[in-house]
Amino acid sequence: MGLFAWAVSLALVDGTDGLTRSLTPDSYLGDVNEVGDDPLEYLRTFTSRSAEHTTATRGHPPGPVLLLWALQRAGVTGHFGLALIVTAIGALSAPLVLGAVRDVSGEDVARRYAPVLILAPYAVWLAVSMDAVVLTIAAAMTLAGLRATRNRAWRAAGWAILAGLLLGVAALFSYAAAWLGLSIVGIYFARRRAALNLFSGLGALAPVLAASAAGFGWTDGLGTAYADFAKTIEPQRSALWWGLISICALLLACGPAVYASVRKVRNTPAWPFLLGAASAVLFSIAAGLARGGVEHAWLPFFPWLTVAAIAPEEQGGEPVESPLLLVSVGALTAIVIEAVLRTPW
Image (cartoon, rainbow, N blue to C red; front, side, top):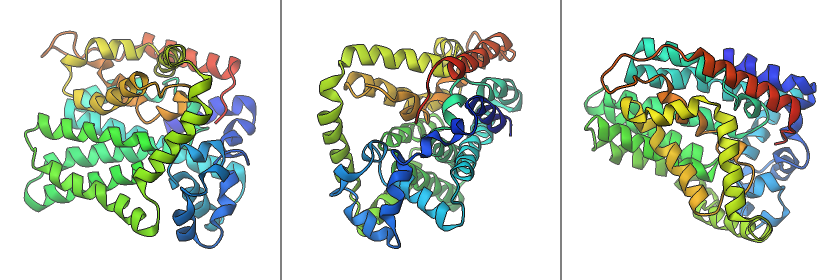
């Protein structure tokens, strides 16, 4: 509830529009009517009709639009109600992330990390971005992967398959989510359970192959999204300058806790969590893909980049107390961002 309350409070600085601005006709919601009564037909034509989609939809798989369509079919038709549900789904990431931290570092560390997670500046975008859904799915994936390593035989395989399934579902919401699979690989490596990679890999393929059978080829969609990026964005924005701007956006979104986390990453057993997130960020910058909108696109990565903020100063040492000064500065940063900057979808 803490992250939900913080995100909604920040969004309502701009009134109800602060919650609904990601659900305007020029974003995902503008494509919901295309689904109509036949979501399978929508999947079959998703890639071929990419040019007809809104900017947000063209850069993503069909998951966000289909989720909004399903919510509307369930009776949630108002923009405000949809926004609250999407924000609530994103806020569910908090207990899942804390559960993952507790699994690898213990109850005390998870409690000390809670303020860092809940009052983070990226909560500004949690309430205005469909990528918050990806954050929660990825957090559930990570926790399932950890559960797999705590079990044996078929129970372990079941949890590993579930982790893979969640990764595959996340990939149907965001192409970049696939990078988070490296976190699962890191967990299995750290706990010497490499065989679980097979089960998670098979699980990850299931949603992607199911979508392919329904008519949406994930790799085709990725190629189409990149072609649109290369045509509409790449020529207009310098990779160097926008790479630097993206790094600044990341530092603002994560707050000062990210510095403490990067500095002490070797001292925490939670290092696998940073593996997928850091790889995705570094690849985006190195490949010249970070040219705007990273405050949303990287939202599924932000919490994992700060998990080492409460790690010991030395390997094997005592965890530090909750860095209340860093938390306060981060919360103040979120307030300033919301008050000064425009934060559209």
